[in-house]
Image (cartoon, rainbow, N blue to C red; front, top):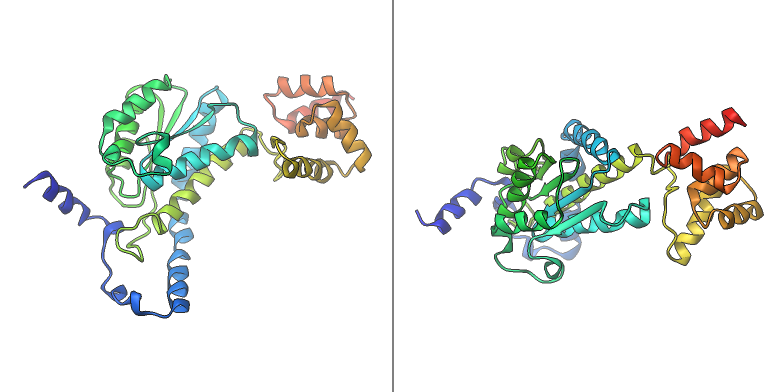
Length: 310
C-alpha cells in the first residue's frame, strides 16, 4: 500500500472525515434551510465538549500548577488548529496582562501560515521539534497539541518532543482513540462527528477546539488570580475602549465614585488591580504594589492582609 493509500485508509476511520449521505443534497436547499441546518449542527458542539469536562479540569489544574512556578503555556497545531492556538495566545496579554512569551501559539509553517496555506508543513514533526527548541522548552512549561484528526504529525510531534523533555503535555483532538491523546499526559477528545461539509474540520471541530482552548486558558488564569470574581482586574488598558473598561471594572469592584477611581488609577499608573486594592483597603499605591507582589499578584489574599492589618 502506498503512503497516499495508507493515509486515505487512515482518514476513512476518522469520524471528522465521514461523509453523510443524508446531507448530499444540501446545495439545492433554500438559504434559510441551509443556515438553519448548519446552526443545528453547531448546537451539538457544547454537548460534545461537556463529555470532556473532567479531563479538561484535570488538565487545567496541571497547567495552572506549572504556570504558578513560572512555566509557559504553548499551543501547537497546523492549519485551523494552529490559527486557533495563536488566537488564544494573542488574546491573553490584553485580557490577563500576561507577560510576553507567557502564552505562545505555534503554527506549522510559521507566521505566514496564519494567512496562507504552507503546503506540507503539517506533515513534518521535525518542524515542531525545531519550533519548541527555539523556545528553550523546560519541564515547567506546558505544550497543548491541537489537531481535529488527532493524527497531524506536527501536533503529535510537538507533544512527543515536549513530553520527552519533561514538560506537561495536553492533546486536544476531535476523534476518539487518537494518536495525539495517546502521546499526551492529558488527552482531551471532543468527538464532534461528521461535518456539514465532509472533512471541513474548521466547522464543528474548529468550534470545539476554540471552546476548549477558551476553557484551558481562561480557567487557568482565574486560578492564577488574574481575575477578582468575574472581573478582569489584570486587563491591559492599551486603547480607549480598554481604558474605559478599566474604569468600569474598578467601579464594579469597589462602588467608588468616579473622582476616587480616577485618583486611584492615576496613583497606580493605570493598574486596575492596584487601584481596586487602594480603594477597598484604604492603602497607598506603594503599599498596594508591595502587597500584590507578596501574594503573586492575587488580589483577594492581598486584600485580606491589608484589611487585617488596617
